Image (cartoon, rainbow, N blue to C red; front, side, top):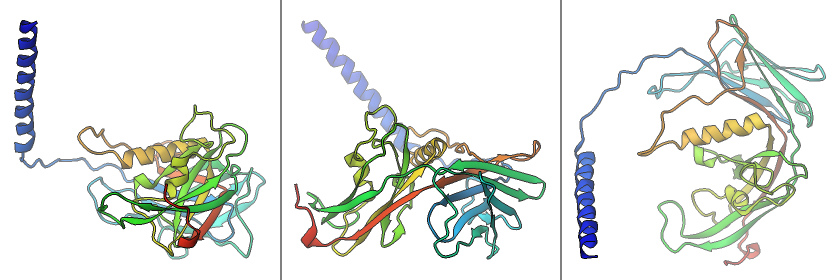
Length: 311
Protein backbone atom coordinates (compact mmCIF):
# COMPACT_ATOMS: atom_id res chain seq x y z
CA UNK A 1 0.00 0.00 0.00
CA UNK A 2 2.83 2.42 0.83
CA UNK A 3 4.41 1.82 -2.58
CA UNK A 4 1.14 2.55 -4.34
CA UNK A 5 0.67 5.74 -2.35
CA UNK A 6 4.18 6.93 -3.32
CA UNK A 7 3.43 6.27 -6.97
CA UNK A 8 0.16 8.21 -6.69
CA UNK A 9 1.91 11.20 -5.07
CA UNK A 10 4.77 11.24 -7.61
CA UNK A 11 2.31 10.99 -10.50
CA UNK A 12 0.33 14.01 -9.34
CA UNK A 13 3.50 15.97 -8.56
CA UNK A 14 4.66 15.46 -12.16
CA UNK A 15 1.27 16.53 -13.47
CA UNK A 16 1.35 19.64 -11.30
CA UNK A 17 4.81 20.62 -12.60
CA UNK A 18 3.67 20.00 -16.18
CA UNK A 19 0.61 22.20 -15.59
CA UNK A 20 2.83 25.01 -14.28
CA UNK A 21 5.04 24.85 -17.37
CA UNK A 22 1.98 24.80 -19.62
CA UNK A 23 0.47 27.80 -17.83
CA UNK A 24 3.76 29.69 -18.03
CA UNK A 25 3.95 28.99 -21.74
CA UNK A 26 0.44 30.27 -22.31
CA UNK A 27 0.93 33.44 -20.28
CA UNK A 28 4.37 34.31 -21.65
CA UNK A 29 3.49 34.00 -25.34
CA UNK A 30 3.07 37.64 -26.32
CA UNK A 31 4.36 37.66 -29.89
CA UNK A 32 2.07 39.50 -32.29
CA UNK A 33 1.20 37.49 -35.38
CA UNK A 34 -0.07 39.30 -38.46
CA UNK A 35 -2.43 37.08 -40.40
CA UNK A 36 -2.21 37.49 -44.16
CA UNK A 37 -5.80 36.61 -45.04
CA UNK A 38 -6.87 36.30 -48.65
CA UNK A 39 -9.60 38.55 -49.98
CA UNK A 40 -12.64 36.47 -50.89
CA UNK A 41 -15.35 37.26 -53.43
CA UNK A 42 -18.02 39.81 -52.60
CA UNK A 43 -21.34 38.07 -51.94
CA UNK A 44 -24.93 39.25 -51.80
CA UNK A 45 -26.30 39.15 -48.24
CA UNK A 46 -30.08 38.82 -47.85
CA UNK A 47 -31.84 39.83 -44.63
CA UNK A 48 -35.46 39.30 -45.57
CA UNK A 49 -38.22 38.45 -43.10
CA UNK A 50 -41.85 39.08 -44.04
CA UNK A 51 -44.84 38.49 -41.76
CA UNK A 52 -48.62 38.61 -41.44
CA UNK A 53 -48.71 41.98 -39.65
CA UNK A 54 -50.19 45.14 -41.21
CA UNK A 55 -47.81 47.84 -42.38
CA UNK A 56 -44.63 47.97 -44.45
CA UNK A 57 -42.43 44.93 -45.10
CA UNK A 58 -38.65 45.14 -45.64
CA UNK A 59 -35.96 43.08 -47.34
CA UNK A 60 -32.44 44.35 -46.73
CA UNK A 61 -29.70 43.68 -49.29
CA UNK A 62 -26.00 44.34 -48.63
CA UNK A 63 -22.62 43.20 -49.90
CA UNK A 64 -20.35 41.03 -47.79
CA UNK A 65 -16.99 42.32 -46.57
CA UNK A 66 -13.69 40.80 -45.45
CA UNK A 67 -13.59 39.30 -41.96
CA UNK A 68 -11.43 42.09 -40.52
CA UNK A 69 -13.30 44.92 -42.28
CA UNK A 70 -15.12 46.90 -39.58
CA UNK A 71 -16.79 49.39 -41.92
CA UNK A 72 -20.56 49.44 -42.43
CA UNK A 73 -21.88 46.96 -45.03
CA UNK A 74 -22.33 48.48 -48.47
CA UNK A 75 -25.96 48.47 -49.70
CA UNK A 76 -27.02 46.67 -52.85
CA UNK A 77 -28.56 49.30 -55.11
CA UNK A 78 -30.61 49.01 -58.28
CA UNK A 79 -31.87 45.47 -57.75
CA UNK A 80 -35.36 44.30 -58.75
CA UNK A 81 -37.02 42.62 -55.78
CA UNK A 82 -40.39 40.87 -55.80
CA UNK A 83 -42.24 38.40 -53.58
CA UNK A 84 -44.94 36.18 -55.11
CA UNK A 85 -47.35 34.02 -53.13
CA UNK A 86 -48.70 30.64 -54.23
CA UNK A 87 -51.93 32.28 -55.42
CA UNK A 88 -50.04 34.42 -57.93
CA UNK A 89 -50.15 37.73 -56.02
CA UNK A 90 -47.00 39.77 -56.73
CA UNK A 91 -45.57 42.24 -54.21
CA UNK A 92 -42.94 44.70 -55.45
CA UNK A 93 -40.22 45.88 -53.04
CA UNK A 94 -38.50 49.18 -53.87
CA UNK A 95 -35.30 50.78 -52.57
CA UNK A 96 -36.97 54.15 -51.95
CA UNK A 97 -34.08 55.67 -49.97
CA UNK A 98 -31.35 54.06 -52.10
CA UNK A 99 -29.88 52.48 -48.98
CA UNK A 100 -30.40 48.78 -49.67
CA UNK A 101 -33.66 48.60 -47.71
CA UNK A 102 -36.26 47.36 -50.20
CA UNK A 103 -39.75 48.23 -48.97
CA UNK A 104 -43.26 47.02 -49.78
CA UNK A 105 -45.68 49.66 -48.59
CA UNK A 106 -48.73 48.30 -46.81
CA UNK A 107 -51.96 50.26 -46.75
CA UNK A 108 -54.28 50.39 -43.74
CA UNK A 109 -54.93 46.95 -42.32
CA UNK A 110 -53.72 45.19 -45.47
CA UNK A 111 -51.22 42.40 -44.80
CA UNK A 112 -48.77 40.78 -47.18
CA UNK A 113 -48.42 37.54 -45.25
CA UNK A 114 -51.18 34.97 -44.75
CA UNK A 115 -50.91 31.81 -42.65
CA UNK A 116 -50.68 28.73 -44.85
CA UNK A 117 -49.39 30.49 -47.95
CA UNK A 118 -45.95 30.03 -49.53
CA UNK A 119 -43.89 33.02 -50.66
CA UNK A 120 -41.22 33.05 -53.37
CA UNK A 121 -38.51 35.72 -53.37
CA UNK A 122 -36.85 36.93 -56.58
CA UNK A 123 -33.88 39.31 -56.67
CA UNK A 124 -32.54 40.42 -60.04
CA UNK A 125 -29.17 42.14 -59.87
CA UNK A 126 -27.13 42.41 -63.07
CA UNK A 127 -26.75 38.99 -64.63
CA UNK A 128 -27.67 37.22 -61.41
CA UNK A 129 -31.14 36.13 -60.28
CA UNK A 130 -31.46 34.97 -56.68
CA UNK A 131 -34.44 32.97 -55.45
CA UNK A 132 -35.78 31.58 -52.18
CA UNK A 133 -39.10 30.46 -50.73
CA UNK A 134 -40.75 30.18 -47.31
CA UNK A 135 -44.13 29.21 -45.88
CA UNK A 136 -46.00 31.04 -43.12
CA UNK A 137 -46.76 28.54 -40.37
CA UNK A 138 -49.38 28.85 -37.60
CA UNK A 139 -48.57 30.54 -34.31
CA UNK A 140 -50.32 30.26 -30.91
CA UNK A 141 -51.71 33.24 -29.03
CA UNK A 142 -49.66 34.71 -26.19
CA UNK A 143 -51.90 34.40 -23.14
CA UNK A 144 -50.08 36.74 -20.74
CA UNK A 145 -46.85 38.50 -19.78
CA UNK A 146 -46.13 38.36 -16.04
CA UNK A 147 -43.32 39.54 -13.77
CA UNK A 148 -41.89 38.61 -10.40
CA UNK A 149 -39.86 40.56 -7.84
CA UNK A 150 -36.25 39.41 -7.60
CA UNK A 151 -33.37 40.37 -5.31
CA UNK A 152 -29.94 39.18 -6.42
CA UNK A 153 -27.52 37.96 -3.73
CA UNK A 154 -24.69 40.04 -5.24
CA UNK A 155 -24.22 43.26 -7.14
CA UNK A 156 -24.27 42.41 -10.87
CA UNK A 157 -21.87 44.05 -13.31
CA UNK A 158 -24.83 45.15 -15.39
CA UNK A 159 -28.15 46.38 -14.12
CA UNK A 160 -29.78 46.66 -10.71
CA UNK A 161 -29.54 44.28 -7.78
CA UNK A 162 -33.30 44.46 -7.21
CA UNK A 163 -35.91 44.40 -9.93
CA UNK A 164 -38.26 42.12 -11.84
CA UNK A 165 -37.97 39.01 -13.98
CA UNK A 166 -40.50 38.98 -16.83
CA UNK A 167 -41.89 35.88 -18.51
CA UNK A 168 -44.67 35.05 -20.95
CA UNK A 169 -47.26 32.29 -21.10
CA UNK A 170 -48.35 30.58 -24.30
CA UNK A 171 -49.40 27.04 -25.18
CA UNK A 172 -47.94 25.21 -28.15
CA UNK A 173 -50.53 24.14 -30.71
CA UNK A 174 -51.30 20.40 -30.80
CA UNK A 175 -49.37 18.56 -33.49
CA UNK A 176 -45.65 17.84 -33.27
CA UNK A 177 -43.09 19.87 -35.20
CA UNK A 178 -44.08 23.51 -34.68
CA UNK A 179 -41.06 25.81 -34.46
CA UNK A 180 -40.90 29.31 -33.02
CA UNK A 181 -38.58 32.29 -32.65
CA UNK A 182 -39.02 34.05 -29.28
CA UNK A 183 -38.19 37.77 -29.40
CA UNK A 184 -38.08 40.02 -26.31
CA UNK A 185 -39.79 43.41 -26.65
CA UNK A 186 -38.59 46.36 -24.57
CA UNK A 187 -40.16 49.84 -24.81
CA UNK A 188 -42.10 48.73 -27.88
CA UNK A 189 -39.05 47.53 -29.84
CA UNK A 190 -37.49 44.15 -30.48
CA UNK A 191 -34.52 43.82 -28.08
CA UNK A 192 -32.03 41.60 -29.90
CA UNK A 193 -28.46 42.89 -30.03
CA UNK A 194 -26.23 39.79 -29.85
CA UNK A 195 -26.18 36.07 -30.51
CA UNK A 196 -27.16 35.13 -26.97
CA UNK A 197 -30.45 37.00 -27.48
CA UNK A 198 -31.55 34.48 -30.12
CA UNK A 199 -34.00 31.94 -28.71
CA UNK A 200 -35.86 29.30 -30.70
CA UNK A 201 -38.29 26.61 -29.58
CA UNK A 202 -39.40 23.24 -30.95
CA UNK A 203 -43.03 22.87 -29.84
CA UNK A 204 -42.92 24.00 -26.17
CA UNK A 205 -39.31 22.88 -25.61
CA UNK A 206 -35.84 23.84 -26.81
CA UNK A 207 -35.38 21.04 -29.35
CA UNK A 208 -36.88 17.94 -30.89
CA UNK A 209 -37.08 14.79 -28.81
CA UNK A 210 -38.71 16.21 -25.70
CA UNK A 211 -42.39 15.37 -25.00
CA UNK A 212 -43.46 19.03 -25.22
CA UNK A 213 -46.12 18.99 -27.94
CA UNK A 214 -49.27 20.91 -26.98
CA UNK A 215 -47.88 22.05 -23.62
CA UNK A 216 -47.17 25.47 -22.08
CA UNK A 217 -43.70 26.73 -23.04
CA UNK A 218 -41.15 25.54 -20.47
CA UNK A 219 -39.75 27.98 -17.89
CA UNK A 220 -36.37 28.78 -19.51
CA UNK A 221 -38.15 29.68 -22.75
CA UNK A 222 -40.82 31.71 -20.95
CA UNK A 223 -38.14 33.74 -19.18
CA UNK A 224 -36.12 34.27 -22.36
CA UNK A 225 -37.63 37.76 -22.59
CA UNK A 226 -35.54 38.75 -19.54
CA UNK A 227 -32.00 39.28 -20.73
CA UNK A 228 -28.83 40.59 -19.09
CA UNK A 229 -30.40 42.50 -16.20
CA UNK A 230 -33.55 42.81 -14.16
CA UNK A 231 -36.32 45.17 -15.24
CA UNK A 232 -37.27 48.18 -13.13
CA UNK A 233 -40.74 49.34 -12.15
CA UNK A 234 -42.45 51.17 -14.99
CA UNK A 235 -40.55 49.31 -17.70
CA UNK A 236 -42.51 48.27 -20.80
CA UNK A 237 -41.74 44.63 -21.59
CA UNK A 238 -43.26 41.97 -23.79
CA UNK A 239 -42.74 39.24 -26.33
CA UNK A 240 -43.17 38.49 -30.00
CA UNK A 241 -43.67 34.82 -30.81
CA UNK A 242 -42.87 34.05 -34.47
CA UNK A 243 -43.73 30.82 -36.26
CA UNK A 244 -40.81 29.66 -38.42
CA UNK A 245 -40.03 26.88 -40.86
CA UNK A 246 -37.60 24.02 -40.13
CA UNK A 247 -35.02 25.74 -42.36
CA UNK A 248 -35.35 29.01 -40.43
CA UNK A 249 -35.09 27.13 -37.13
CA UNK A 250 -31.74 25.60 -38.14
CA UNK A 251 -30.48 28.89 -39.59
CA UNK A 252 -31.15 30.84 -36.37
CA UNK A 253 -29.61 28.08 -34.25
CA UNK A 254 -26.43 28.16 -36.34
CA UNK A 255 -26.25 31.96 -36.23
CA UNK A 256 -26.49 31.81 -32.42
CA UNK A 257 -23.77 29.15 -32.28
CA UNK A 258 -21.43 31.09 -34.58
CA UNK A 259 -22.07 34.33 -32.72
CA UNK A 260 -21.22 32.69 -29.39
CA UNK A 261 -18.21 30.83 -30.78
CA UNK A 262 -15.19 31.97 -28.78
CA UNK A 263 -12.71 31.16 -26.07
CA UNK A 264 -9.95 28.56 -25.89
CA UNK A 265 -11.99 25.86 -27.63
CA UNK A 266 -13.51 28.00 -30.40
CA UNK A 267 -13.90 26.40 -33.80
CA UNK A 268 -13.11 28.15 -37.12
CA UNK A 269 -15.77 30.65 -38.16
CA UNK A 270 -17.91 29.51 -41.11
CA UNK A 271 -20.72 31.04 -43.11
CA UNK A 272 -24.16 29.81 -42.09
CA UNK A 273 -25.93 27.97 -44.91
CA UNK A 274 -28.41 30.18 -46.76
CA UNK A 275 -31.78 29.23 -48.27
CA UNK A 276 -31.20 31.77 -51.07
CA UNK A 277 -29.72 30.41 -54.31
CA UNK A 278 -28.19 32.02 -57.39
CA UNK A 279 -29.80 30.69 -60.56
CA UNK A 280 -26.73 31.77 -62.56
CA UNK A 281 -24.53 28.63 -62.70
CA UNK A 282 -21.42 30.82 -62.96
CA UNK A 283 -22.55 33.28 -60.30
CA UNK A 284 -21.34 33.66 -56.73
CA UNK A 285 -23.42 32.05 -53.99
CA UNK A 286 -25.35 34.44 -51.72
CA UNK A 287 -25.53 34.62 -47.92
CA UNK A 288 -28.36 35.34 -45.49
CA UNK A 289 -31.91 34.12 -45.27
CA UNK A 290 -35.43 34.77 -46.52
CA UNK A 291 -38.20 33.80 -44.11
CA UNK A 292 -41.94 34.25 -43.71
CA UNK A 293 -43.58 34.21 -40.27
CA UNK A 294 -46.82 34.68 -38.38
CA UNK A 295 -46.54 36.83 -35.25
CA UNK A 296 -48.26 36.76 -31.86
CA UNK A 297 -47.40 39.73 -29.62
CA UNK A 298 -48.18 41.00 -26.11
CA UNK A 299 -46.72 43.77 -23.93
CA UNK A 300 -47.23 45.04 -20.39
CA UNK A 301 -45.90 47.70 -18.02
CA UNK A 302 -44.32 46.52 -14.77
CA UNK A 303 -46.43 47.63 -11.82
CA UNK A 304 -44.98 46.70 -8.40
CA UNK A 305 -48.50 46.39 -6.96
CA UNK A 306 -49.29 43.63 -9.47
CA UNK A 307 -45.97 41.78 -9.31
CA UNK A 308 -45.73 38.23 -8.08
CA UNK A 309 -43.85 37.90 -4.77
CA UNK A 310 -40.32 36.56 -4.55
CA UNK A 311 -39.92 32.83 -4.12
